[in-house]
Length: 320
Length: 320
Image 1 (cartoon, helix red, strand yellow):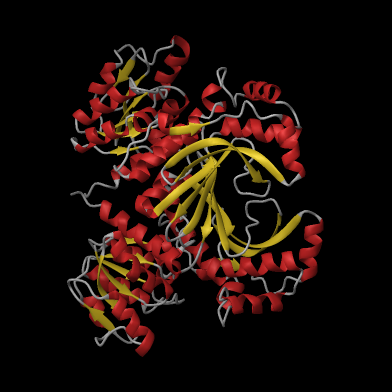
Image 2 (cartoon, each protein chain N blue to C red):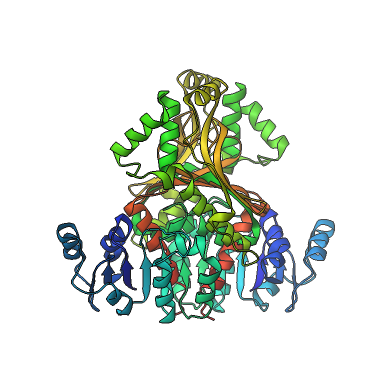
């Protein structure tokens, strides 16, 4: 497939770099200020080098990417809340041209799910968004394969930054501020870590799952989630828990139509007590009991691999 | 889709019972001695009741099922080795009529993979076989979504009976024969448990994965697997291991083109140290690190759920 990639952060850049390996051609690449397009395929290396040196991937207008010759748009701009712009407009532009859309950006499917599904219905293009929930872990594809009607809920650790901080606090007995600073030094937490440590990122992923499970009966947005982060957990709580064979993790869940994210006490032996930046999702099914998937929930190549899995699924959905 | 189901053991019966819930119609159901067919859909309950009472699902010849009006054949007869018959003939009959095939029977894809792929190439019908590896766990679908070229290997606990026995031996300090008898009483092990405890079942699953990863470059059969079972593990070995924070599990792996099944010492905290009949597979990928999937690897409804996920994937592979 020919891919138009909007966004040149870790994910967009990785998709661009890996596309060839997966048999696809990048015909457009855009950042917030520029774009480079070529119907026969751009020079990805050169474009990313330009980005590193000049701050721009190309000399064209960003909108050129939306007008380029492509089969599938990859939307990998930063997640925005509320109106989910400009990501939402990029999705609409692709669907208006009957092109497929693969999202890494959570905004459109967390905050405007019904609108996006309506755009899809009115288009020949199809939407996929595996990368928005759990990076490379097969969460949405497993729910899709089971059939959303046969999935009764999910629970899991869906943010690696928050989990790293909590598991380090538990192991080292150090305070939150200290471990957060360590995480920032390691590049595991951002300069502004609030999205991660306040639970917003995990909540957006749960909201997306809730929208999928609801199958159009109800629409969820971030406002429907009950969210508590990790900033108020004292080291003493972790120490007490550990004396009882337990620990604390930031757990997100979609159960009985509710979306909740918050610190929970779990047994230290629980599969939910993952360490470091690892993520895990428990998928409760009607006929197959509990399925667990775990792995790296974030990262450039990891998330790109989920994007490219979606592109593959779109390709094989076409009869030759 | 209209399903013709061959096999009325736990899996075939569950597929027949659940088909309606997933939007499909069972137009044929056969056991080894009889069949019942109805182009508008058989009465599954009545057929299974007849099976329980008379030992036969219907009054027709088993071959009637292969001639019935159906879109997808579900082959759920017992796994056989070598020539993989009669399962192989059932697969061929379906492909000769350009029908799709979903396997729960491991034989054709473990022992005659190249032959089966050749039949598929010469047919309009398509083959899927998620249920043959790990029951409801999304193993083959995850490998397919990553792209087999991007999966470097797998490792895991792929047989619930063997794992139950080992984990009970470790927990209870009881001997192999004692725990095996307990497993048989519980219905976790069969009267003839050799397929499970000798590692054959786990090996067949690994051989199937090896065939998928090889992408036609090489064909594997059970004979290519290096297999060792659990019958020679003394309780003392488990006790020694546990004093060192370790335990023993029957691990199957496909690594560097080799297929091996045997008892391995693993840390007690390892994700491989699953308990009871739980299964787990670690999938090593080129771009996304290690993905883990775990859950119930066997059981009627569990395996049926994997069969029905394959039917769903076949359905959505068709452009409307």
